[in-house]
Amino acid sequence: MKSHLGTRILQVVPTLLLVSIIVFGLQQLMPGDPALVLAGEERDPAVLAQIRAELWLDRPLPVQYFHWIGNVLHGDLGFSWRIRQPVAQLVLEKLPVTLQLGLMAFVIALSIGIPMGILSAVKKNTFWDYVANGVGLAGLSTPNFWLGIMLILLVSVKLGWLPPSGYVSLFEDWRQSLATTIMPAFVLGNAIAAVLMRHTRSAMLTALEQDYVRTARAKGLREYIVVLRHALRNALVPVVTLGALELGTLLSGAVLTEQVFSIPGFGKLIVDAVFNRDYPVVQGVVLVTATVYVALNLLADVLYVLINPKLRSA
Image 1 (tube, rainbow, N blue to C red):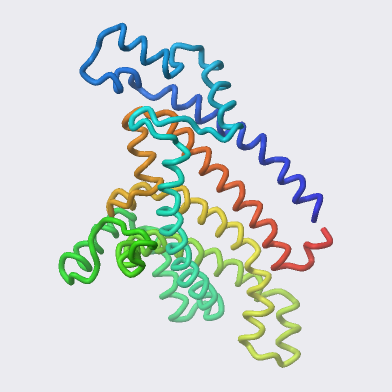
Image 2 (image 1 turned 45 degrees about the vertical axis):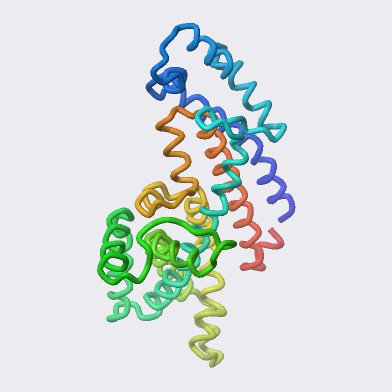
């Protein structure tokens, strides 16, 4: 186990290095000149040359990359070209917003997806199985932006129960904060719940056919103990991997959902940065996102061992 985790940790550095190279290289293919965007109406060649010199845009690409990655290794993600603020500060401002939204959506997804997957597997080919599969199919097929708009029209405009958009910090007013984030969290969690439901069902169907489940039933154990303690514990191993990846997706920012509900999180930050050719912000957000993904994958490896004791000797 220790050797496996050690190997995975050693893979973090080359993975993040490769991500940084890809992000830096691909954004150079974006159309438009950042200097022209920053100069606005001023197209004086001398002004443009000064802007390019200040931002290192007049250097060769390898020089620009090593300048940026060198600063990153010292904890400096650079400055936003558009609003002239440190990228690290912007990330710290937006991260709690997306973190709250993502965790709420993940809790909703777990609360819906896993119980429905278990129910569908245990009640295979029954009415409840068809209902669970129908709900899962609807969740996978419904676009997030459409569901968000429909919820705003129904819950906010027609019923007036919740605010249609905006965000309030938990530290300012926790009730208002939950009111502004529960709808977007449900929109995000609905899609993830459908994915978790289908994977949980598949894993549970496989686990319920194993010999140890038959043995547990032969011992006279109650069905809920067989399902939850024996079958579910082994079925959760592949679900943990999926859950870690889906949580990483949520924390990286759901662009469309945040745009629909005007949530000032990672998604809105990176969209604004792309439209304004704000390369340092794009690079910083993507690098932080990649780091979150890698960390969650490492966490999934640890959870494997906690869930399945047989892996501890591997």
